[in-house]
Image (cartoon, rainbow, N blue to C red):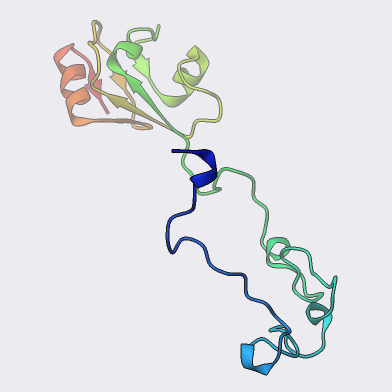
Length: 144
């Protein structure tokens, strides 16, 4: 193969449509631009999103940041994380104070990952999976 013999595949290129070459071409006279108006003239253009002076869609919609307002801030903690809690009682406030969950967390769920070596009492504001509940009760704790 030589560089001077390289050609595009057959049918992959088309001839450019020549506008303004008479009515027989289908694009004569106004050349497919219609009659009058800014876009029919040479150099006439609108910026992207321009709606003729009407407030554009991207400015009409409310700006709310990157996180949805309705999003629940739920933190998942494991059974082995409950071993780190100093007090025998576990609730959302104590988990925040101990540093296991952040201050902006609205709900906490305990999952059955790892093992629990001490008895803890889990209060109602902390959700617990079925497997985690069985593990807590097996360790001598309870879920209220």
